[in-house]
Image (cartoon, rainbow, N blue to C red; front, top):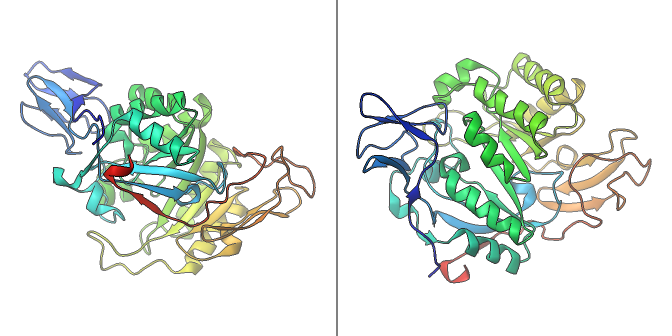
Length: 361
């Protein structure tokens, strides 16, 4: 058994004149009376204060390839210790991890681990980073921040896999401790965000701009393309043009395939041709690194030099098939630096997935 603390006081809330307290973590601003939970389900009012009920408890730990987050320009080939808790502050009808993020049962959280135990386990297993994923780490803010601090003390980097739906003050604290982030830009229309996620687009765009302008966090973007919902040429043109103009052409974009899930079982899977079309639109709008995901597509999954076009990182799924970067991160063919966080040699973790049990922590 680990030395985890189960549950902890939450930050970012204030009292209202009518006796309720308001959670200020995300733009939902849930207003709670005693015993009530926020929309995320894991933050509740208890005894006049806000509590995070999932602190120290996880829905599972697993060592994954970093490319699965997905991050293609951050320590390629290395293993990452991934974990999440339960609950979410979005209500995506298409959630691909619905059994975790939509959970309303605390028995989903079967494993316990303190931030220090997670950091030490990652180091012992040779992981270069820890990923806060499966459900959105925004909702377990305090647990994620404390874990990231413990990881930094051990020389382990931290990776956030998030929808970016968070208020400015907690956002600043959260990303102060992150080294990389994959932000889920779910679509580029308010209609989509409102009807299919129960949230709004603008706060997500503000998070992306904040990350690029105010932090040193390495950022990549993922969009799950859902047939008939967010995959039109017009929307993809607007999205990729916005990214190029507001974030820069070096931010990698991942277009991944939807599979029927949760409350959208009647929608067919995304055809590979849609992913390739999205990638082509992104490249045409100036995005220098555009990828396809959730399909086996070596062309769409590989990294190419933006200057000479040489393949600098070959990938087939999570298998690395080639490495053409010099020790300084430059293309071996022409010398142009490829943006990202690279080491002299890539990792060799490959596509392995190693689930961890309580005794492993």
